[in-house]
Image 1: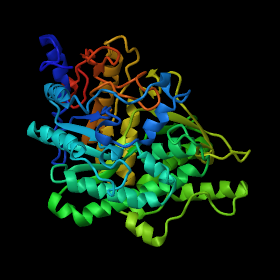
Image 2 (image 1 turned 180 degrees about the horizontal axis):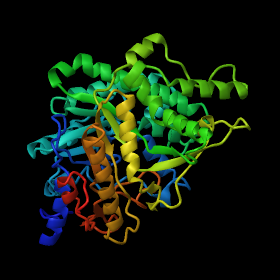
Image 3 (image 1 turned 180 degrees about the vertical axis):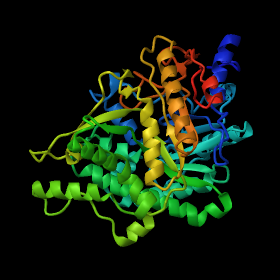
Length: 493
């Protein structure tokens, strides 16, 4: 699948050495660490060694228009059986950190520890972690990345509050099995995006929309599940394991479409409150939702004839339990949008309708698929987090730009995105004094992407799924960002 040099010429190695430069961040303050991440959502082996089905296995096997070309993640990049080959490429790139997700239904096929698990499934992750550490690569491990065990979805999934105890049990199992070596944990990946797509719009499995209600109920349980897991780590494992736990929030920046319009300005503030602050404020500030979110949903619910707000309420005990349950702020940024006020005069249900906005890109922005090149957006977002959440330590746990033409290895446009984004990131660190200590730069392998599956991706190693052995081919990194890093993001004069 990949020889020790990944088939790269000397010139190619020089080009890719730029990636190693991303690890050489300027130590302008003591909190700043050298960090370069890659993610692994590429396991395959969907039923290997008794793995239970996840909701995504069920969803993709049903086929239909919701799944790109009826593709599945049954094999993906095959990392479950080809980890040794993957490790060679990871070492060749000189990575310092590697982020990957555990599969809940692989470790616990029915979602609970009652099921008799097989050590082979534990050993797979043990070997990954041990190999990474042996090569001085820090593992960053995500407990939940959208793939709920189907057995738990059959019991109500994230719409049922029984999921909170199930998730806490799973988290404690993982902390016990791997926490002696894993020191950075992400409990839930992008819960704000997941709750909307899975349980409000029905675009993600289980695929049943609950407009205006399901997303809020799922989010309510996701927040409580995260908090329970954080407390379990804090009380049972932190003293001995000395790790950190947070959750990763997806967020792009938003600007009013008309900067002179008060209505557009307020709509942009609501958009950020519903998208980012909905999760961040309870966890980082006071255990409760933003006031503008509560008042907006309550007002809209009343107009729609509901006897009470469609947004569930936290009890005072739950607020105390949720407050302060993050050791760092993990955010995932790709792009930005414009927001225009649009009154929901027809009383339509849905999260976007509750915000009362239209959200769209500037047509002048360069883009591939849904990612528009808006470098200044990341600086504004990070400054907002710094100012709103008491200057937390920030990890950018995802960031990247998709490959537009999968038949070409010329990724000039993508590296221009990275170059400009780095410049804004350094402005945020050096001028705004945000405590950004690490950034996920890109995906290592061409993986199964949620909506487009193998159609569009963020890889730097293209896996040819249709050829025997799924051989890899590196994308061309013709723009070097190493000089940008060394010059604190400044252009050559």
